[in-house]
Amino acid sequence: MLEPDLEAWLILSFAPGLTNDAFRRLLAIFRGPEEILAASRADLARVSDRAARAVAGPRPDELLARVADWLGDPANHVITLADDHYPKALLDTADPPPLIYAKGRIDLLNAPTFAVVGSRNATAQGIAHAEAFARALSAAGLTIVSGLALGIDAAAHRGALLGKASSIAVVGTGLDIVYPARNRDLAHQLAREGCIVSEFPLGTPAIAANFPRRNRLISGLGRGCLVVEAAVSSGSLITARLANEQGKDVFALPGSIHSPLAKGCHSLIKQGAKLVETAEDILEELKIATAPVSGATTTGPAGDTKPHPALVHMGFDPCDFDTLTARSGLSAAVLSALLTQWELEGAIEALPGNRYQRVR
Image (cartoon, rainbow, N blue to C red; front, top):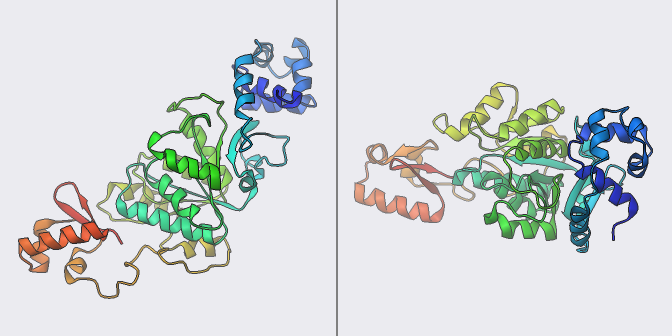
């Protein structure tokens, strides 16, 4: 059974056509959700006729029963604007949801947080950077917020879970659905060691329009936002724009001028985002005490003080096989064997078109 007050919050959240803004305006006029449900049609119309019609809709008993069953797991929570655990950072945004669903450590919702986002189709180098930055920032006490997508998001969560401050995933589905399915194991780890959050009711599938809405919560929760890799059409740039509109610091990693996944970051830097090369750059900007963490920089493989000459000739931009043969002076057979070895070691990444790129 649901507590009457929580049940009233949920009934209003399920009301079709009742926007977040109208919900909050009703709360400002009446004392609470139970009073809203008890109000007359004429009083409700003080907000709008549409809001009055929405509140007067049929009782969503099946949805309420679904939430009651879900709350039987002590890891699951419904947090309303009236709850102490509601993220205070969201109260300073333009459109805070009246309630959120949360699974896991809800104490993290009001911890110092930082958003890390980027491309779903990330390079191996971008994934390594996201993990390293997130781990370093988490070790410094910042809970990392991201969106549980493939690529950079997942890497940021994995890195943050290795640090002391853990991670929060904000998703665009109901919390009884794991999307994408390939991140199921990561989602389960976040539920145990971090937190997963959604404003969408249980059962909400992966609908494209929900993910830009999800992004405003990612940026709203974070003290700042780092974009690791992003094409010019990436949804990560929506998160960065929202962060900027919310008065948050936006950071971006530079990349190769030839890489499509660097163009979004370069565009952000041109628009005033802070170029960063190490996690310490972010911590210094946020005035957080820094503690160097191995792997938190974007330059040079750790412990590799004398890379192979052919790697030096490759540089950090994509390089095709013929060009590398000419630069290094090695035979095609020797170079092919070296490239295979380096790829297995994770030192380089094979790209389309018989091209290669150093990873770190």
